[in-house]
Image 1 (cartoon, rainbow, N blue to C red):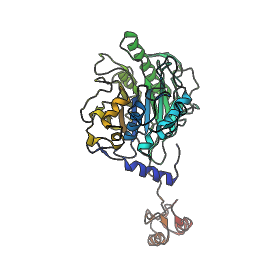
Image 2: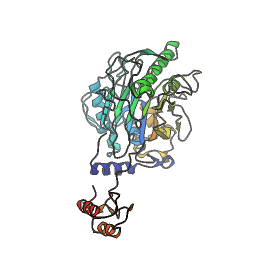
Image 3: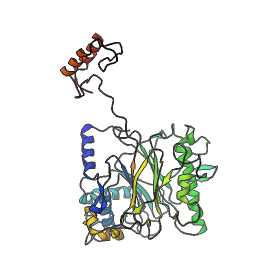
Image 4: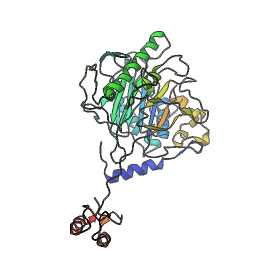
Length: 445
């Protein structure tokens, strides 16, 4: 994990605290605690593509930028990007990387000419997500993307932090084998700052097969079964401490499993409503594996993971596309604790409760969600294991972060005593402790 300079830590904390409030009724949609990790999944229905109009107006691109600025996710996972409305002409990885930069920060539009005038930092100049992972997997129309405030880094020693789809594997147990489905199941390993978090984060993202035919349903289930096996056996080692203990994957194996403080949080458009599908569908498989409940789950301790029951704040609707819930976020709940999950729909949000960044959408903030996509985003805030407190400066006896005259006075007051704070070596306060304190003179490290 990376270490931040003190000035960067302070700047990050101050920026986060400005939005660290949750009171939607009064137009405050920020996190309860700035250290919570906010994950947002959104099928943007082709609104991010080279052919999109990127000027401030009533259009998908503009609406998407306003809503992202209002929700301020730490991790944003996107589906249905790169589709320009023609057959087999999906935008390239490089083009989509450029598009995300334009969506966040504006600039000259190299695709349509002119300037991009609708972008996230136009509505909140302090907010940015500089790290972008565009999947190489595509169905010829769309790609998946992970955008992050934090950098990607190899967490398990397989020389990559970005996987566009599962490595091919041979079927085992409940998993038929193969890969993650029609558009792949994307995974990114994210490096969280050491001074705040005890672990890091693995993010999954997928747009599973659409449709209600038997083959569509079978495709979604097969993908989910493969992915839950990958999470359990490849990433977490199925409780053995060894990646791929059954030797099923045709890939360079990691040198280690994902550690005990690093959860897997996955999401996307999984294209099936678990409340009405009359079967164990993709969300159930991705969080519970075969046994429910059981000891083969995709959490690191092999218990079942969880998926969200997010609701729109004002209507309590669970629908993310019309009345159907097709979009989900799941998490390793033995590691990550859900603080809240919600669906954002500006059309259901009273004007007095509208995030200011969304309220500034042309004509009316209430139009933003309908303009942006036929799906509503699901947003979830997670509490992750905190970093241990820094070691105490044991020579600072008075707690002012400086070893000085007052500490020397305290040490002399303890002279000859054992088991007191100034007995650094456990043999009674004496000359060795005095020399140690004087050797540490000055600000605590």
